[in-house]
Amino acid sequence: MRTELTPSATVVAAARPRALWADTAKGACIVLVVLWHVVMKDYLQVDWHIGIPLPGAWGTLGEQLLPLRMPLFFTISGVFATTALARTWRQTARSRVAKFLYLYAAWLLIHTAILSAVPDFATARADSALALLEQLTITPSNLWYLYALAAYFVIAKALHRVPRTVVLAAAAALSAITASGVLATPGDRGGLYQNLVFFLTGAYLRPHIERWAETATSRRLALSFLAYASALAVMAAAGAQRWPGVWLAVGLVAVAFGVTAAARLARSPAIGGPLAALGRRTLPIYVIHMPLLALLHLVLHEPISNLGFTGQIIAALCYPAVLSAVVIALCLLIHRALLTLGASWLFELPRLRSRQPRPGRQYATAGEVAPPVG
Picture 1 (tube, rainbow, N blue to C red):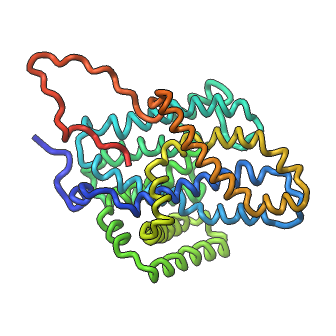
Picture 2 (cartoon, rainbow, N blue to C red):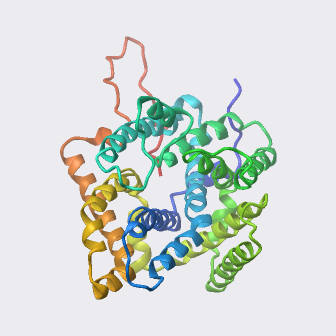
Picture 3 (cartoon, rainbow, N blue to C red):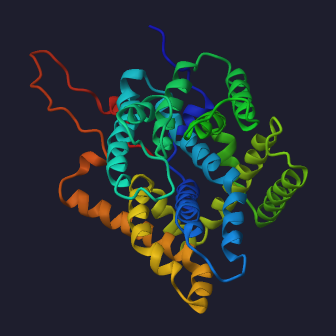
């Protein structure tokens, strides 16, 4: 009988316990995702009348982190996917495909319902049955990370017999073509196309990425940061954001810096500990924060816009960081409350009631049970 994957260094590496640096990276990424949405969808929508470009500075900072946030997030997701990719379809389809598609559909309906009550909130939402169907199928919504994880896993699993260099080259070409504006990318389809290469990089090059993290030094952190900052500066100065391959190259430099930074932060209990804890709870933060932010925007927009000069100066300086922290804390509280109320089906694919086994039918062995998603 033909096996799906032959043993390799990647499979052996997949058996190792998850590293603290990877959880730290995921925690940092989810913080940056929330901060970006706070800045773009709430903070910059405030009526600022201070005459100082502080809001623009927050927006510029968020834009400089675009090549880092999701590329690093998907690289780490690819690293965590190696165990599942080494198993059979039957063992992993439920935990890696059905689960994420189910969560995407369930939370898309929740987001659509809540966002319809906040029409002025600056984010895309389905305003008709046809638009909802489109978001469910070909044009993912702001929940596209879940949609992408399911799609990426299917692609990586289906192409496991194709040489990895060929698959990576094709994914890199797709990313470069998308970034250059050749392909139409309505909704969040652009992110879906551009980040496959990073997921595959994490899945295919896990041993190398782990070695890079394990050997991270302060000198490498400084050099990788300098390389990332220089790449951003050169790209901006040349106006090369849409040059084929440039965004991808900057993203790869950003991931190298992000892994190094996460590895160094993980060695600091005061910083790495809380970030790693968040990294193990990214799902509830990711699915809850957008509708929660929309409701907070409804409450806070007018009061912040009507503050006096001193109040607006203070808000312009610290409002994004404070509101991001509040949103993350509330997401975790809401998650705990929902679990207490028995709504675990909002975060896990519900299991069908198991039927009594027929005579002679064997139970699944422990090795056939897919591990929880990292």
